[in-house]
Length: 609
Image 1 (cartoon, rainbow, N blue to C red):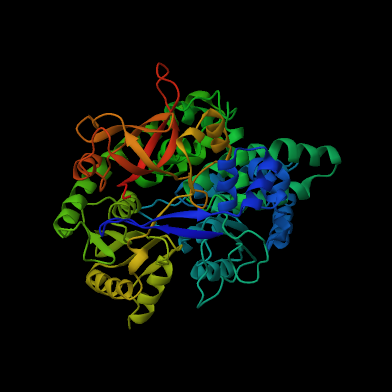
Image 2 (cartoon, rainbow, N blue to C red; image 1 turned 90 degrees about the horizontal axis):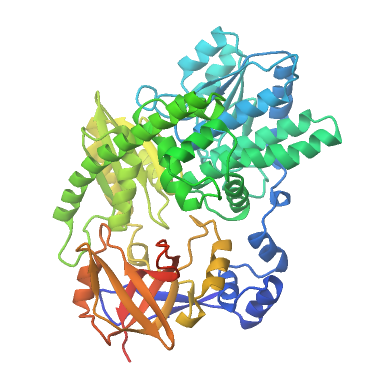
């Protein structure tokens, strides 16, 4: 796949990039899928060329899920859980307080209880830590209490890959620890000394797909133990046709919420799970979708899951106790489910209010730092305030990245400790950065840290924050430059306006669900002409009426932080007859009185002949 840079004709403009595609490959995909040429060009540009890959992309199925027994440690874990269930040994599931951790807890608890004989029910309990009082990760005190209560098997979900102290304590206490996690291991120290570690990212694991979320890893263990418990073909058939699709509902929510790449097995999980979310039977899930105002007569979109379902689940762990989420998804009491869903809704409102207050302070600081040309002098932002709530730090870091295009660490302070979350940009591995600055500090900078390339969590003494700020600026200044800080605008395909019609849009919808790794296609059309004056909506948004040949569309520009469409149109002196190139996403109008398609603008630039 080749790329062609499109000159911007202005020093302050980002370059636009479109993809060149092999014509023969495009024609093969058109013949295989029966899709419009523009869709075939999109697939070829994204690397889907072979017939099997095209089929799996448009028609994902359960057969596209990899065998869980391919994961290192899986067989050992399955045998130990079977043994515990047969002997009625108490089992503790050690969860986490976000969407990934709470849904993983529900999945595994449900699976273990289902595999047990009816006359000998499994003894499964769970612990979901409190974000403020306990923080992220396994605590040795919780393990000691569990051992004292007779627990003999502990299974971590979405945590544990760096729990070296907890693994050591588990051995001392006589606990068999099974770690299921997806976070990156500590390269210097390896993996914890546990009975079994199930993590596709660990060294030596040959599982073909490495980017599962924590709930998906827990689902793999759930699938494996349920499959091992099947004794007849009828039971195996029921597992494949009914239980696995049912489990995928929560796995899809976690996969979308955790922003893992929606490609490969993740896309299969998200596609099938979203389809199963239509008209959900489970009481708590139905109540949650109702308070989130998501219709239950159709599958929700990935956007609805990411912006309406996931924030309400996360709000419990951010603002109160995440165990409410586990109870919500386990209860069969309709009234209790409605009460819990309503509570999550209230907590989400509190979260939004807390976030808005902090964002005002952050926006003020960024405005002070911003240079006259709109850029920022810092390569990496480290911002802290004792008034900021620990539950929204990750969200605040994401907002800084969105506005500045630079990585950000956001911290708050409590009792002499600073607690923080970080988010990054493409090409800057944030966990590696924290690992480097920690190792370069003689005393070790952090009390704890972990995460991914794009998201991290950490804590350190308050008096070390100035060192953190200095170290991160030094580290980032040697690694961030050029296109990493001003990436080109990457358009998937160049297309004519007259190719945009309901059939094309229906195929675009089939290319979803969209997210990290499978972004919503960005289309580009050259030399469209404005047929009317720019219409300003609510003093900050714009509507452009554009035409090319015999095609005419409304193009909406929605202003957000760091993107003011009114100013952009004024700077370009746009009016009737102006000719521009546009980058946009295709939308179906939501107003039933004005049906059809419209464009959502991502960028515009003047035409230079």
